[in-house]
Image (tube, rainbow, N blue to C red; front, top):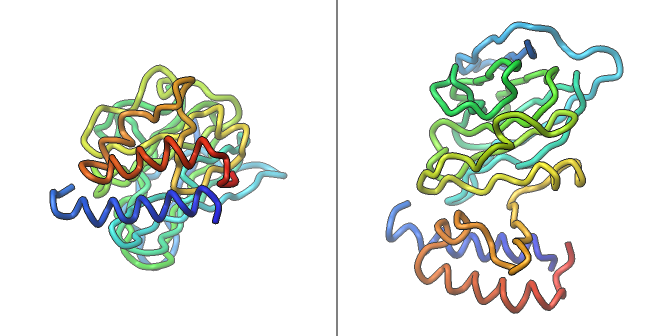
Amino acid sequence: MNRRTFMKNIAGGVAVLGTSTGVTGASNENSTAESGGGTDAGGGSGGGGSTTHTIQMVTEGGEYYFDPVGLHVDPGDTVEWVLESGDHSATAYAESNQAEQRIPADASGFDSGLLGETGASFSYTFEVEGTYDYFCSPHKQLGMVGRVVCGDPGGPAEEGAIPNEPGSGLMPGSGDIVEAGSLSYPYVPSGGSSGSLPWQFWAAAGGLGTAVVAMVSKYDRASGRYSE
């Protein structure tokens, strides 16, 4: 069992406990039978040699997530969000979406609209370098957020943390994304020099779950017995 699988199992147990307490830039397009009412930002598609990447939009038990949650692309590459289960959107943190601006100033905000048919998809071609944070409209408060870095990191997303909202989720660091190329869900940060995890992780755990995860983090992560 690797650490990713182990931590996902722990997160699943915490989610069960939590139910008792509540809980110029690019082109974009929807495809499949259900369009979802996405926003057309204009622009053009990637040129020759560009790559299309896929991000799954998933509901699994009490979890709602994008996978991978962090992705590095080159200018001209296209990302296709595909609905695997549930009802989700891919919506940029942009003023055009009535959200805090967390994409490059020269990039156009994207919004897939709500997708509800399995296999429905939405595509966006990244032209402007920088960091793009996005969320699922109905599940943002449950931590369904993601990040795409196009070329080198930069822009408003690098200037501060995502809005301090309940259950706002963990946003992967841009340096980690660039280094790995792709970061699968669940994203568990390594923490700072003290070995602690960001506040969102503990807030999401809640109550008894926090104590369980803390014990795992302190002893099992430190032991190194779980592979990366």
